[in-house]
Image (cartoon, rainbow, N blue to C red; front, top):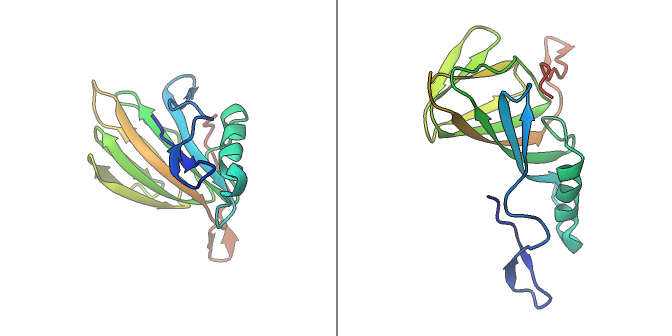
Length: 167
């Protein structure tokens, strides 16, 4: 559930009724992972005049964005089935990943790993990585906030985006 606030004509805070509170769930990787796009923004700073940000989010609900949004942010939940490992992938974004349910291992292309437990946060800075639900019988859920960033340059080489086949 996503509760979006706005203002009424007098300037009082109210809950927006223009978007359903339950975000649509999208199956990715042949249905192995479940993505729910909770909110998006475009540009920095975010323009909220005339509900411009809400209108942009409405557009992304029908025109699904890639993993990250160039020049903006995406807030989404991802559900991982038991013993599932996502493909290795890299996005031009600085991401904050929070484990909401279960335990998830962050796997880097160097072979390094870290086990994240409920409430732990990973800051993903444009690196090539995968996520692994370590449970053999329970789903795991993470919340991600992905904010657009410049592509990473290492040793004069630009590291390009690679969504790893995540559709």
